[in-house]
Length: 209
Image (cartoon, rainbow, N blue to C red; front, side):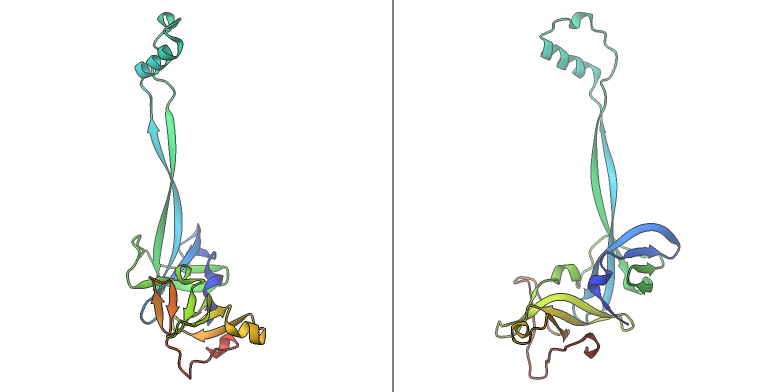
């Protein structure tokens, strides 16, 4: 089955043994060399609490300083002041291996097992990172802009790019074209570089990839 990466982003990520979890897919990672599906990610926000109390004597010193001591001689030391509490939002991202995915629907991705990691995997590239990058050939000419990635879920690989803003739009009036995945990302220039050859033809529809 061929599936759009863009449609997976925002889908529910559901563990087959804990369907009450409400996580959303926020990225998909692919192998940098053979474009295999490696991981999908979701994030969990934890609300941490930093609890700090102001000691009573510090509290009274503050009162004395504010009132120049007037009336404080009759003010009893009643204990600690009200605690000051700070909350920190901590977002943790989990990387789930793609081989744990057991079912894919347009609005839901179901996975199994407990294998997951918090460290970003090496030798992978992220869909959200390369989205909107220009695709350029060896002469520096822009072929188009990456609008989406096409995934083959049976082969577990990216098979093509959905391109927008290419030369064909002004010539033919088409909004987008499809191109088989080739070349590699250039992180310094933030563009996807390919070697354009005579047999590299842009496709008109998804099924031609």
